[in-house]
Image (cartoon, rainbow, N blue to C red; front, side, top):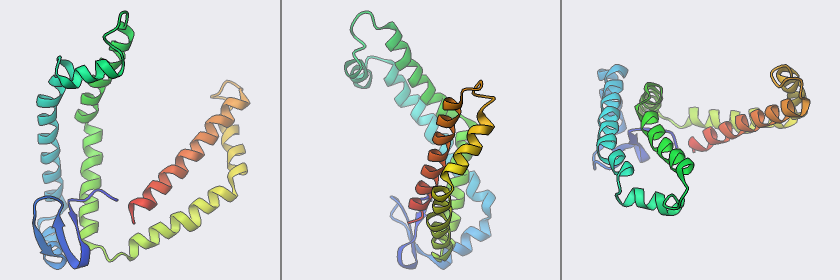
Amino acid sequence: MALSAVECPNGVCHSHHGGHAVDRHTLQEQLHAHGEGWCERVAERVYEISVDSFCQTVMPNLHQEGWQRRHLDWEFKLDREPAEAERTVVDGAINAMESFLRSTEVQRLFVKELVQGTLAEADQSGLRSQAVRQLIERELLTHLQEQREQLLERLATQLLSEADGDDARARRAAAEGIEEVEHLLVNHAEALS
């Protein structure tokens, strides 16, 4: 499912948890009157408040001896000696989570997805989503399957110099790349249903 601030079953748009309900036409009019910039500012501000709240409340608990940290220590056996390398990885993952959430790129992607999803949901007739899904499932994925060997060969050849002439390494990277693209396409098609 695409990220959206509203869901619109039967021509009525609902906030997910706020209990609001408004007909699709009214929501469309208001969103177009406010403009995409207004929606972006709302999404950016909600994201900033959420990240600040998370970093002020959750992150300190992960670093301290609270239940969350005790659970990590227990689950990953960090209380045994020596476990300095393991504690370093866990603390690094905790810090990476905060850095990830504070990343301007992550915020930009969240805002873009939310605004586009919300506007699309308000305007959705279902036909465009159906067209995209059919294009992915019946055309792109089929083409990838039918042309898999040729694509694999071309990609492996292109990656050969970066793989220091190791043909097996280049083929493995090419195969993984094709699988990742297939996975992304399947996820996108499923998000449209």
